[in-house]
Image (cartoon, rainbow, N blue to C red; front, top):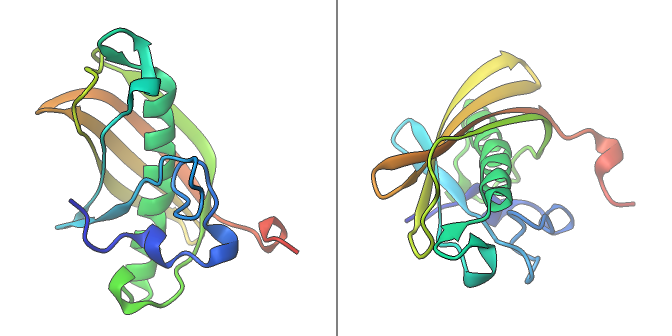
Length: 157
C-alpha cells in the first residue's frame, strides 16, 4: 500500500475532492504515491459500488482513473521540482482536462483494485497519464488523463 501519498500534503482548501480529498468524509479518499518509477493507487470498492451483484460500477473506475491521473501529475511535477510527498512541501494541484476510459473486463467486487500509471509530459503545465486498473493480476480498465495545472481561479476565495 501507499506510505506517502500526494493527497496527504494537498493544502486544506484543496483537499475536498469526492474522489481523492482526504477531508471529504463521504468520498473515496484515493491515495496516490510512487512505486518505483510508476504511480499507484489502491482501493477496495464498497458494497455501494455495485453495478450488478458481484461486479463494480464503472463510474467508480472512472473516478479512480481520474483522481489517479491528477495525483500522478502532481507527483511527477513535484518530483521534477525536487520534492517528494514526505517532504511536507505543498505540491502543485491539477485538474482534469480530458479523460478517456476503456473497460476491458468486468471488475469483480470484493477485490482490492490497483491503478498503475506512467506520466508523459506534453507541456510544462500539462501531463498525460496512462493508467491501467488491475483486479488480481488482470487489467479491468485502462485510461488516459490529460491533467492541467490548476488555475488560480479555481481556488476558494
